[in-house]
Length: 75
Image 1 (cartoon, one colour):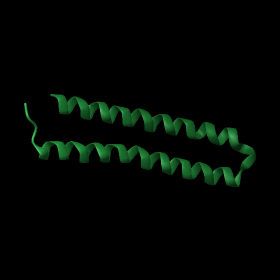
Image 2 (spheres, one colour):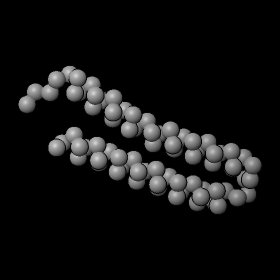
Image 3 (tube, one colour):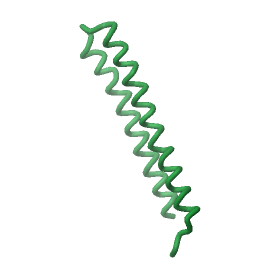
């Protein structure tokens, strides 16, 4: 079947938004981590371990969001 340009444009816009959300979240977590590292440089391992859980949650959430979007678009 031939998809019209409106469907393709909608797909691109929604996918771009879905990619922007995790990028903004990771940037925010990274900014907060750098601020903490500047204040407490001797606590680097503890700060990095604290950020690890947040990054895992963001990555799993974004993967689930992309897979859900793919499932909706293919049915």
